[in-house]
Length: 326
Image 1: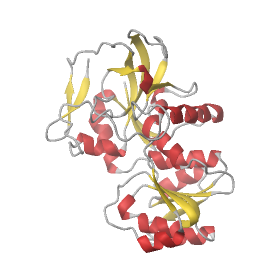
Image 2: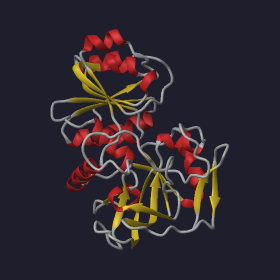
Image 3: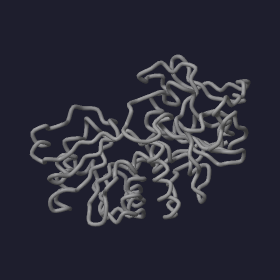
Image 4: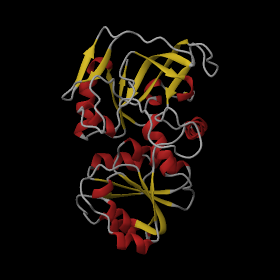
């Protein structure tokens, strides 16, 4: 089978004669139909991650169809459409800590077939394509977890227009919340408004965007989706309401920007979001199915153009998710 692996010095190498895996007991063999890119994949493909990934098949997120099952498999059968979980062993309950993730400690989805434990898969919501389903494991579930509890009358601030932010906006609007978004692109601002963002703040024109958000809401937002991390926390602290919550889902902006005194004065909560469990995934998928929500996909690249997909993703010009199909 064909598969992409990470080179020693970074970059991808296409292998055309990699053995097709056979499902062991409790596993299913999946014909991969689509995968999607996340921010962490840039560092993984560059082999600049916390572990050496030389020779590893990258990408944590993917969807496909079951082609064979191993002994003892009861959750799925041949022909089922499935999507993988980000945390393969976090089934339910409290977060157990980082484990053996796909694309880093285990081979990921950027290949024609994968053999995975049946417990690390969920069924694809009926209305979604494989391409749409492949966007769910990391970005969608992170957005879902980050806005859990947000409802009518609440206000949410999302940073930018990447996959997590767009999903968080969609879920918050389904719940009846008022959403404000930051961006520096008028095109992306229009797309964010089309998805239901009530106000847009240009973070380049307004470096002190936290103050502007506080003005727009007459006291701050109830929830902040924090993507930048160290480089943007001070503005998020300025934007959050007294007693509100900052959901930390990324650390993409360089710096050391947390004003502890200001945070203390807000009496706010800083909560780290680590995607979610399989149980959370199932719960989210019920909402996706009932609501008819459709993931926002920027572009779809064929498997042979995986490098072009990464280049496009790294450019930062995308709105929503970048997908590779087969």
